[in-house]
Length: 430
Image (spheres, rainbow, N blue to C red):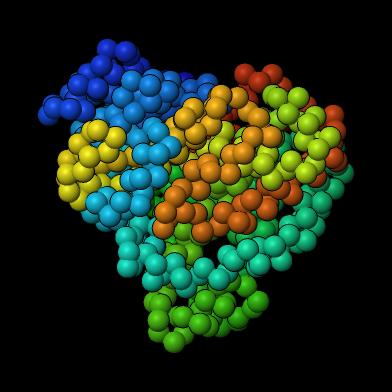
């Protein structure tokens, strides 16, 4: 098997033929075993291209049946409208703890069953816990962080320039910037960011053992539990301290439940933005006309960030649901107990919603993209992520206007083996 830069064997991409999609189309209207169904997940195998089955199924069978690693039958939603419909439909559950909830690997199954934060809950539990941290992510509070985010980014660019070239953008900027921002917002010590990122990465891999994945997940929760004790004894002006004072100390939120919530927020705040910065930088370098337009028209940065999120969609196999009863979606009956993958990467390339969807165009209105999900589970930290991306790309390309790859594109190691798509490194010169 080919190896990624991390030394992990990359998961092969299942070959899906027209015949298999014909079988899938037939299976969508009548009972069948899973034996003939294509195996999911489909992983990206060529840089920015999505797996071919997404577009093929969207054209031939938009709600397509697949089989999972454990032979469970599941359905892929490849259309934008179907994605939105299912995520607000009470006939579908987002409760990770359900025995029939779909998982992409055996390792992920164990992690799902151990998840106790609101990301894996239906209402009323979801809203009950989410409300406890929502005011930490208001537009006003996020905008108040912008000067600090700009200062952090300037400092990292200063360090890159002082150290010289070539440099690895992933290590020097994409990892560091979100980590420092999360320190400012969340209250985690900066020196712990490498450990946090390691736990998040170990949790999101596709090819690690169930034991290794569970250990990574448990380690991050245990870290957060210790940090809660420290913050309770020594409160500061940060998110953790405020939630502890308002909800934990009065007994409205247990320390263990808050540790699970903190683990979820930390891994989301570090991992996804890191991968967007690396992928986004490389995407701009591969599209010099779009980069030139952003430099000439800086007011396009908001739409450029939405287009980056639409085009890249780094969270690969989410959101997920399970049918609580038989339900018809786009003419297809999904049976009670069947899993559903509302694949945002596929929905974000739906030509019915985004004309010429495989074209990267920073001037398009992509504000209705689904990279942050939809419905009650829409990403809590989306406002922060947008600001980070709105800050980092103009500053990076203004500081280094001649920025370019230090190695051929084919040498750049993509994260083909992770649920969060990205780059392991991005060597650049200026």
